[in-house]
Each structure stands twice: as C-alpha cells, then as structure tokens.
Image 1 (spheres, rainbow, N blue to C red):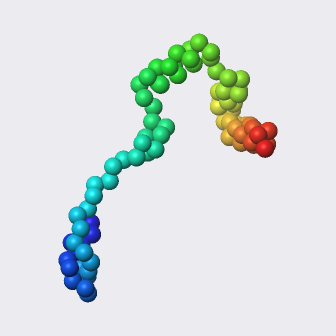
Image 2 (cartoon, rainbow, N blue to C red):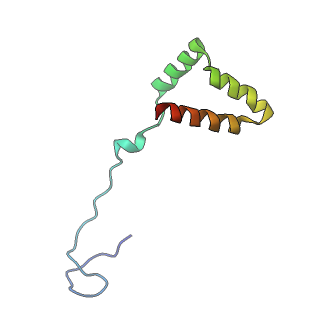
Image 3 (cartoon, rainbow, N blue to C red):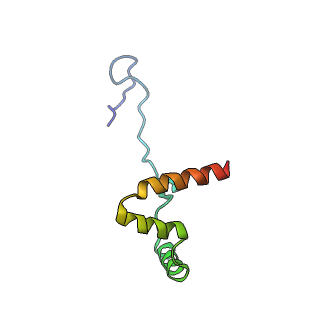
Amino acid sequence: MAVQRTNLRYGANTGHPTTAIDKVTKPSHRKGALSAKNKLVRSVVREVAGFAPYERRVMELLRNSKVCVFLTQFINRQLMAVL
C-alpha cells in the first residue's frame, strides 16, 4: 500500500493528496472461464460427435507415454499448413 500523500513539496509524502480508486475486473480477465451453459453444450457435443481422430491417437499413445512427441509434431504440421 502506498504512503498517504500530503501537500508537501519535499520528503516521502510529496504530491497532491488523492484517494485510491478500486480496480474493476475487466471482462477480458474472464476469458476462457467455462460457464455452466458452455460446459453442458460441450459435453453434449462430445457425446454425439465423439473424439477427433488425433484425440483418439493421443489416448492410444498415452498408454505408451509417447504422446509428447506426437503432439509436438502434430502442432508443428498444423502451424506449417496455416503459414
């Protein structure tokens, strides 16, 4: 917490006395937070559509603990395709 300012021209408490304004949380700080509605929608879609092919492959590779190599190669291929 900052020191209370006074009207002095010198010293530790220099400056015009002001009151601190409470910070309000930005909506952008909530980005990525899962709401109850989105959670339900995603679970229903996952039930209906199932897993993507790469997700099934990752689950298979999890048993062999080689998933990191596969994912880095997969992500790099996706990035190169975009570029």
